[in-house]
Length: 273
Image 1 (cartoon, helix red, strand yellow):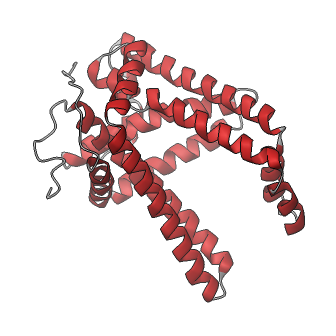
Image 2: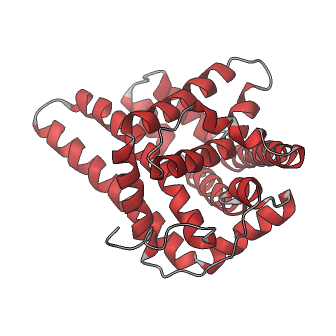
């Protein structure tokens, strides 16, 4: 079934509402949504063991992750419990949509790998060297010396900047294929246009997520530091990071229906909802 999608321009304040509704829908199905994200992490972990193409396949799953969580949120709003079927559902529609989803996944993976190669060239591998030292629990002096490498800044800047640009056309593209029946090129263009027209809402959304993450990280690190338990802080922060990531993916549905309003309830994005 194809739904009629109409691109909307929304006020910047709606970027805050997407986060609020993400937390609300998580409260409805905390175990189911957390399990879905855990399942994705496990699948990615297993795929990484496939020689040669493991990394490519893992990255290729990311567009499917965003669409799967949109479908899960859609079910949760209907008082239904989402299951792992949400990750399979996009491939059970028409052959055209299945092919489009596969092209999107592979296109995203190839683009991400190219960004990684370019970033490695820019920073001369300094980012990978730093990550290796941290993973090997090297001494603080070695890590500090690697962290002040001037090439590191430009490598990080290129990675973050290009990945941010890559996310724009892919933000809504899987959902536009699934619900709107759009082709790959049209879905990528529509997603880009939606983010551009609603850049105020998306900018506020990103700033609030960043502020929330920084505040919680600083607060927890300070509290456990004062208690003399800095090691425990890292464990708590890891669990909190997984929870916030799950809520973030649950909130994606609301940005989609707000930008395209394909039949959402009239009060879905009402501040009093």
